[in-house]
Length: 69
Image (cartoon, rainbow, N blue to C red; front, side, top):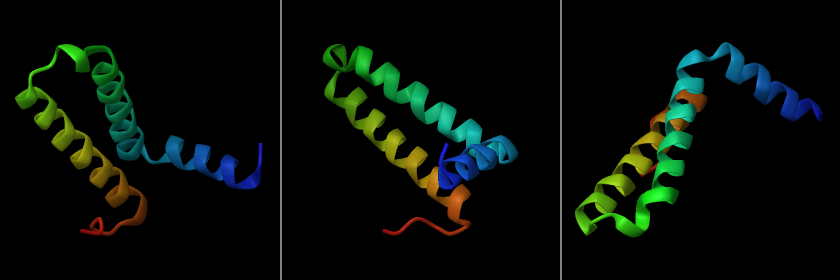
């Protein structure tokens, strides 16, 4: 495992809030993959907004900053 990759794993293990948001992001993405064809436009819009919010949360937890707009 490269040094950079090893540090990423250590960060995820130490940073519990980051791990939880990443897990939620992955779970949501997987659900969208399974259900997207059957979702209404309103559900798809909400799902996209939630993905963007989760991505912003990951950014905030990793950098300690607000995400770029």
